[in-house]
Image (cartoon, rainbow, N blue to C red; front, top):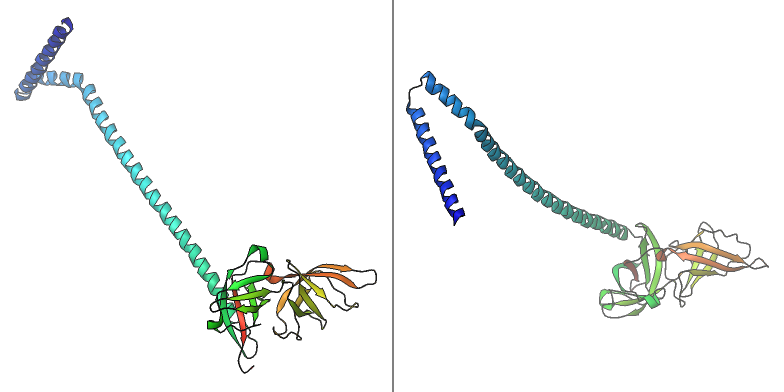
Length: 281
């Protein structure tokens, strides 16, 4: 109870002081600017000016703080927008690059040297079982697209190099099965590039081909390129097959093991070309 009485007295004194100051201010404003009145004004201003300045500075600082916070929020929002635009541009660039690569591949396919009296049919690889990776694959073209039995299949590697890939062995309405060169059932007449030496490239269900029937006098080297021979009944002469990666000889000087890495196994193949013989051929 004592505290409340004291508190009420303090408020009453403050109110009285406030009204006294208001009255003095009004008198000073309405009074004539005599030297005494002017001196009293200067004295009152000097007493009250620190408080007024502090209040003004407080309002100015608060305004600056709010302004800075608003600017930070705006900059952050702009930064978020710029990051999103950057991500969108990056995605667009990837799409453009993919389109460019596809365009390059299609141009190369269109410029593919065709076998005489044959039709080129472009196809995509749709199935390749991991357990039979070096044996078979399925393409998305079949009898209704004009695919025929034993048609040679060509792939493009390194964005520019054409290479023998396999041949058609089974045909369905909208798909076909391709036996790869590395299939143990595949055997293709081959030739050592820049020579007239013919041999046979056999598959054996692995990553490599094996060269057979190589004359004993022929000197082979690692990296020698192997191409299709003119004895080949499916592929034209001179189509790339692969490179020699392993050479072994017997004591008698005969070649016991010559392994070839097919170009088609050096990278993933997604698009192929089927060379379909024309009817009159």
